[in-house]
Image 1 (cartoon, rainbow, N blue to C red):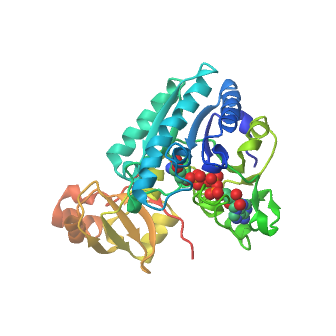
Image 2: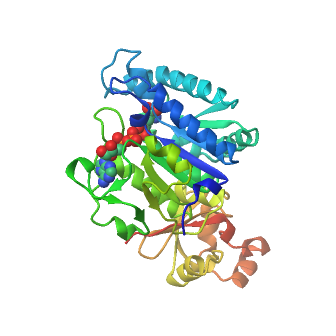
Image 3: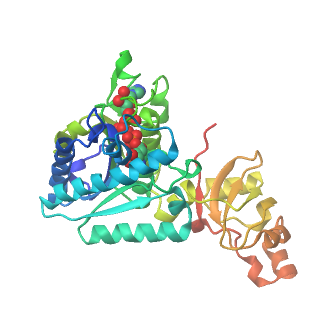
Length: 372
Ligand SMILES: Nc1ncnc2c1ncn2[C@@H]1O[C@H](COP(=O)(O)OP(=O)(O)O)[C@@H](O)[C@H]1O
Ligand SMILES: N[C@@H](CCC(=O)OP(=O)(O)O)C(=O)O
């Protein structure tokens, strides 16, 4: 399987701060324009492009006379507030040059975890795309506190790609590929990652330019894993290579998709939703629910943890306590406790017909990969 960028219908393109800023901390208008021109070529061929762009904090440093990325959160927030405006001004000017409109979406983790706001954000994104606008996403740095930050846009881009069923994600950094170790220490270039085993022995170092990027290679590889597990390919290269890459050249590192594609709701359940409680099931139920992808019946439930209402998200744990799935439950915690271990006929006799339904329907469940 390959990842043919030229025929993709929808792509998420993430660009890091290091690719958009100059050494002294201002925006590199030339690099930004080159990226926009390359994206527009894709759009002209009919690909929908969603840009996830970092660079707000870096872009705010020079106007605020800060020499490097501050450690203090309030100062980072101030830099982001100043820099984000600058960044968007450059993007809208560059896309307007091609007759294209841009739309800004600033998101926090909370926005994607809470179902109502996540559904809303997704709706806005789909509408922008339907209107032919280029959505430009960044973390809402001015309001995100330390505890609730995505922290890096690699993860935000991967989650976005999973939620909007992108055909692929492109991670653009200041390095042209993944290397077996930090390039400055003589690592060798890797052109393809087919499975997590291929990453054994690869040293993922910290960010490149001091004080500019955030996550380094680790967050990029994690982002690639997040999408490939969901059936979406990823390619990592430098922003400078974007024009050639978008013309179809096979540049950088390709991460091949592994898992089956999930629907948006399943992706949200698997990666974002906060669980209100847990349901532990026996070995037979693990086989039925995880192995055969059947609905969870009360008979296989051995215990219920926490307090939740019907419609809440709960974790499904195996007898060893490992989370194997997340799902939207049809019953509250107290109802589930009354139902646990009982067969369907017994539920009908003791509690009534309404209690003969599965506790979690298979369509309302997202199975979770287990790393042992
Ligand atoms: N194994 C590796 N392969 C490639 N680059 C690596 C590796 N380990 C560390 N790096 C460093 O990661 C940097 C990219 O991360 P970062 O600075 O956070 O970029 P961005 O701003 O694009 O998100 C590269 O400049 C490179 O020096
Ligand atoms: N949201 C922050 C960027 C965070 C981030 O992920 O940066 P990077 O590692 O350069 O992609 C900003 O716009 O400055």
